[in-house]
Length: 184
Image (cartoon, rainbow, N blue to C red; front, side, top):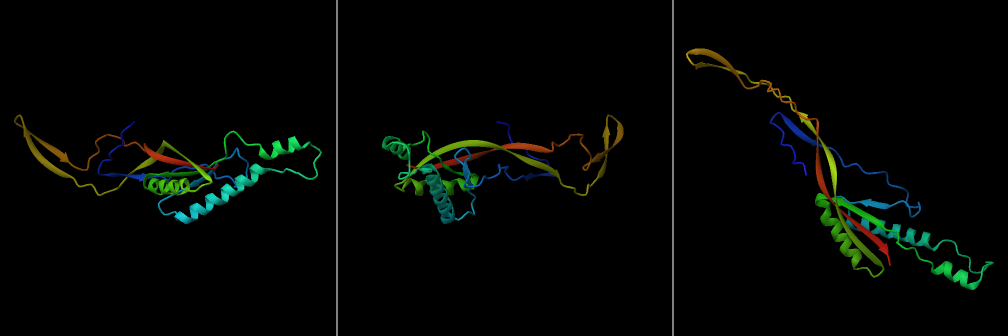
């Protein structure tokens, strides 16, 4: 892992927001992940309600259209259509970084206590980009007379350019906790 750059006194690090992909509609199919990004200010109860709503839509979508009355198929085929289960159940994902990890773990514990939910935890790291911004300060210059080897020299101290260029950006790693919640 690349260590974070410590900026010189005439620069500061400005953090960019974490980039997220566009959140798809909750009515899209199982091929689109249902993601809820949790921050430290996200209310606990509203996340619980969002997850429950998404799980209800997942359950509704998994049932599909099965016509038990006006069907031309046999009873065995209709029963298979009703009891057909997918290999991997569709999940609602909760994602959090840094201080919000505690909140998402609390949500995972809440849903783990529910009889109809299965919870899976995953950890990862994500790279984020920070900008290094120069801060313009008035440069103080001081001239000092120094005698070296019998010769007098005038030195310019402070405020000078040291020729070292600052990078414009840096990459740092953040820990991410992802909680997958699905119906049993």
